[in-house]
Length: 357
Ligand SMILES: Cc1cc2nc3c(=O)[nH]c(=O)nc-3n(C[C@H](O)[C@H](O)[C@H](O)COP(=O)(O)OP(=O)(O)OC[C@H]3O[C@@H](n4cnc5c(N)ncnc54)[C@H](O)[C@@H]3O)c2cc1C
Image (tube, rainbow, N blue to C red):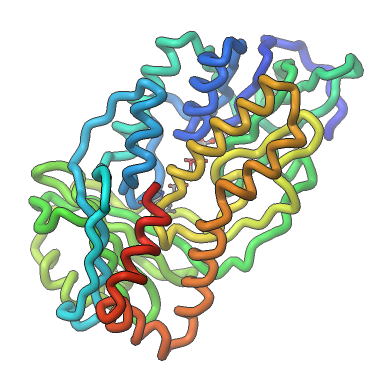
């Protein structure tokens, strides 16, 4: 907490720090619950971010429930592909379809819905938080020296959350894994998201439109996109002469630990509330579910219910993702993963179903 002598610029029931997809979803939830909401976000326009851009069926239905219209390319399941490009394990979702959606398009759709329901947007980067002295009031300090006041703060400011740091809830990162994404002008060759495995990392191929696919690679610190692609020979051959439509954009380190997702009247939501890895492609599904839970707790004046909700909503993701990341650090386990998944389709299918909704 920082001392402050700033001029207070605005006031709202809920201050949402970070206008990414989870912050905007939380803001919409807040307005639908009858609260006044101010979103503080430094970046103008449709915000981009390194992401695999695969919205699981649960994410698609959560967005629909929020009244957010999205457009992209549907996908019916997930396929793991071994380094030889031939051994595969495929699971088609038992219900619903996923959707590949460009991050900028997702952001624009959420921002439009937020504006329609009366969310106010404030441009700025949050640098600190402090109590006001008045009961149940907080002040958020911005980088231009101004400040805003509110009753609750939802920290939705992503992997490198300032709110998490300022509330003392951050517990660091192992710093091992990073992600990079690019887009290629290529008609999708599959109706599933492909996850290609190599000795060092994974590459996701997500259909985005009839003429574009997204490629996201996950792997060790310092990997360049081209170097990463070279470790997936079957995929690299397919992409050999392709026209790239975006440049490489990275994120990481992916793992971010927290001691708790709440302190006082500050609740952490989305990646800000801790992150395991992008390996199972469900950050958005969980972020949207936690946004709904956080607003429910705020509206009821019961912030201490949130850690329980957060634990239960993120349990499968935390266990399955950290289990998979840890196991596949062992080279033999990494080599055997796809063949074993192919031989145990029910186990593979059950895991995909758990993560999809
Ligand atoms: C390579 C990769 C692939 C992925 N693939 C998938 C996938 O296929 N499907 C899926 O569901 N998830 C995927 N994820 C995870 C997904 O991208 C995240 O879970 C999701 O973006 C989290 O949204 P968020 O709003 O919490 O954070 P972000 O999207 O990071 O948004 C945070 C916002 O906060 C703002 N901000 C930051 N600091 C401040 C500050 N100090 N003050 C104010 N605002 C601030 C930022 O500008 C940003 O707009 C992937 C992640 C990576 C890295």
